[in-house]
Image 1 (cartoon, chains in turn red, cyan):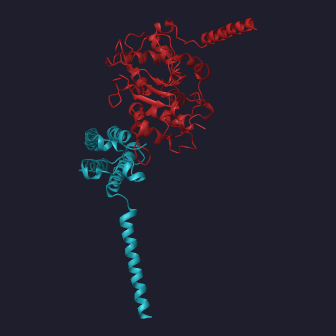
Image 2: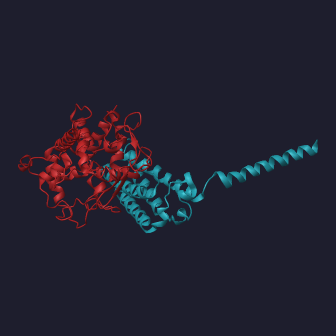
Image 3: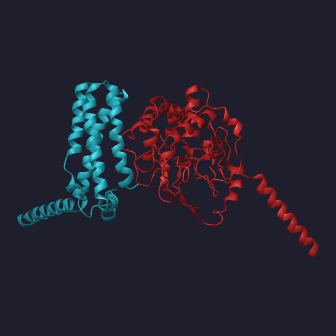
Length: 290
Length: 156
């Protein structure tokens, strides 16, 4: 009996160790990015499409190029606090390599080899192409360095155990395309919506573990802060024309000239800087939803 | 017979007066909240005219665009302190308004966004007559000011 208990304990330890090994944080190989030349000009377009500033600027700031972090996001898992992603070498990402930057965006892994929480939308950014990662890196290196310390997230057990995120990634980190896209315009729209713009992170409901329900893609969801609802973008929920959607992204004005408030105002402040062609590409993707 | 006719008339007059009073007193809502919403409707109406031209839904007309943008500037410049009377937030008036109490707690930032709107409207008034592209680009600034206020001070 005692012998059996010992063997069971050993087995349990082995299973846990194997589990942790299988779900260890993934990184990109430095060689993959060594030969890529980043260009800050197209990197700026990636920056606005990615909406980095919406979360990482200071709480009451309107400066979308200063990214000291500190904004708080209340969810049922606890409160996430956006970190400093300015080029400050101590508090921000100034001493990172491009491979570490790519590992963060594409695998949700920090330079010290830990899992990031999916509040950072790497489940979407994982669909980014490598050149865009390099261009974004070139652009963000030139932003102002801000010596502001990042704060710890305030999460409840067991969500404060980062090792559990390996299992989350195994279940929900699937960097394949969700919707088909035949034409170049639809492909561009899909890239902007499913990868950079990470629209589905809010507009698609999540299961109890916080994984996006692909079966209910863009059908709208309860607001993660608990009050209100994020509207659906599927045709049954949104009857705007493609031009209406594009103009809303450009100006924040709805078809009857109310203006965006709430979280979508932040999105318009960043994604609104894209070209009219990109806005129409996003609108085309949304109109093709089912 | 005559008496009852007079009585019926009196009752009718009293009933009408009562209904009028009730209408004025209870059903039309808070005057300040009404004025704010009317003002917002005027913004929206004029923006609709400009937006239709910017989007190309109707033909661009420099004179009409300029006149409409001047309407918007005039609206933005109106002195509005009395609109934001004390005790007229959604905490006081419920569903009648979406104005958050933070407007009254944060008057200087609220005022700054008002100034941002005036500046954006001024630029729009200068740009509106200079062609469709110029009009379209300047509307974005006004949209930014609208959103800046709504995301901070309007109930979601």
